[in-house]
Length: 87
Image 1 (cartoon, rainbow, N blue to C red):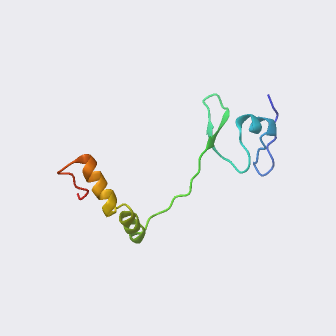
Image 2: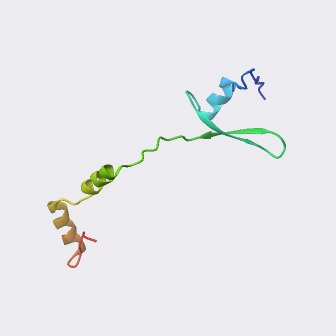
Image 3: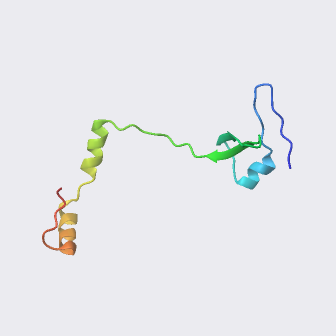
């Protein structure tokens, strides 16, 4: 068991030994919850940037998501007649 101190600013430093044991380093975010027994529970959280796509960017994706003629021909040979890449 390790001892941690709460600063006047409400910050807690987690001992390095525990962070190393968890494989955590650098800037890490945690989910924080209070258990029914009154314990503070920290869980590492994954935080990922979110991109909101504009209509122009969506159109770029759709254009890139097309088979070229060579790919279309090869797929038609594999899947047989009646196959179409058009909705």
